Image (cartoon, rainbow, N blue to C red; front, side):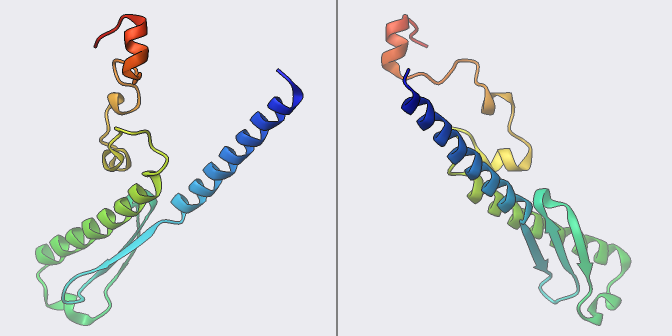
Length: 134
C-alpha cells in the first residue's frame, strides 16, 4: 500500500466525519410547532419530539373544560412531534442503509434487525460463492 492510497483513505475519512458532523448539527436544530385549529394552543417540540414550549395564543383555551383542553394539548403535541419526526426521517434517509425503515428508526421502534439482520446483506453472487442460498 503506497502513501497516496493512505492519504486518500484519510481524506475519505475526513469527508465522512465532516458529513456526520453536519448531519448531527442539522438533527440537533430540528424543531416543529403545531397550533390547534381554533388557535387555543400552540406546541413546539425539538429533536426527538421533546416538548420545548406551550403557548396559548388567544383566550380561546379559557372556554374549554380541563379535560378537553388536556386532550387538545396532547393532540397538538402529537402533531408537532410527528412533524419533527418527518423532518428527522428526511435528513437521515440518504445515509441510512437500504432496507432500514427510517421512520421506525427515528420513532425508536426499529428492532435489532433494522441494524443487524440475522443474515448479513450480501449480494447473490457472493452468497453463491460462499454456498449460502438463504
